[in-house]
Length: 616
Picture (cartoon, rainbow, N blue to C red):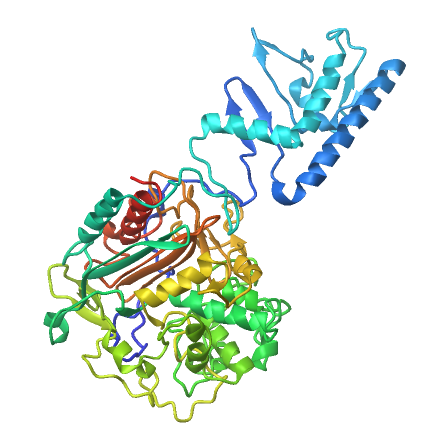
């Protein structure tokens, strides 16, 4: 989807598109995989002629002590209950038999020789009873064993048995992990070998080119065990034939507009304000904005900061999500104004907090809230706080970059004019084609004057959702902050608990409820300005290994970027590519080979992880 009325400095205005993952209009039927709730542990599995129904689908880390105690009490109860009924020769009710039933057929006869009337189903009916006087099974101690199996299925031992059995039929199973959980299986210990690095470098260099799925330039930085173990930069950040001047190479200090990776940095700033007590995650955003902002289709449900960060607010992008400085963001949601449209709100069937739709306007509202609570313009606040804390010269406003930093600014390219693509034609600049002339700080990125802008009225001006210009080196500082759970260079920037909160799913897709848009399976969950990639799901980026990740991608104007950490480790990586020769959503070659991600994302992330984490 393109937005022809968005005007930005140095941007080809006919090529504007969604930041991040919101454009995924490809055929999802080509992708396989299943959707599992984060706490599910294979509730049903098959073992030859046996069928075991296990209801163990709770969080074992938090409820295991309770479950273990309950299983012991349950076992003692059944023992005493059995002895009592044996003495009185009564029948016992069997509602608990439905919790764990093992049925094995031998020579056509059921292990339970129950009469045809009702059959096995009789066990599951309300009021069903199990006779202890029935002559068909004189060894009544079997009943005690069966009832013990019920208790065992809830115990840690039972869980371990179920897990072991499931591995017989499920080759690769990974839980929906968050930061701080166990280290993924299969990761190679120690530093990557020289051979692995050489093979990765060769694969990355093969991605550079001028047609098909090749890119004009790219760069990668990889961390393992908290240390940088690899970096590689190739191709061109500036193409002289397309933009005038001479070709300039991609280097470690090259900076790009990193699209929706910007959301993570904006999210870090919000979490710093949470840490300072200036923002509450579950507070109604109307409290900060100074006016009521509710979905008219859900007028009684407050929209919270948490919902904005996790794209569950029910706010929606329209034809544009960037407003001129003179237009308050309130007009975007206010009937009767020129920027309002009913489609800016979700329907009543998608209530705030319950349904996920990736919407850039959420971060425009967050930018406005940052201005309201700090009294400072968004770009200036970001520059003075989180970006300075991380020891960067990065900026959401290229006009305020230092001369040296501006000189390193790279251009983003595509090979299209409007809707017409020619992969064998010249690279056409899309964004930040300044040709050596730094823009005036008196003008917004949209070209409008900032002289009359009132702080706190329109946070979309500096694109909190995607406008950050940052170098590879500086982006590695963000990565180190996430790897080290809130510290950078020994300095605490964000509490570990808040980093953990960012990496906790606020929304998880469930196929049964269809509770959100997955964009062809590329997004299966979302935290706070970060999202998980499931190693066994349709969002996976490693083809032949199971590896869960947390981070964020960015795609806009031809740029593709990502920054990710491996939960439970101090491993992580980042990449930036600065151009596309074919259409993301109209050319079938752009589709991932085994996931819902774009082919460029699959190639670069699979190569990084296979060679440096799994030692191939």
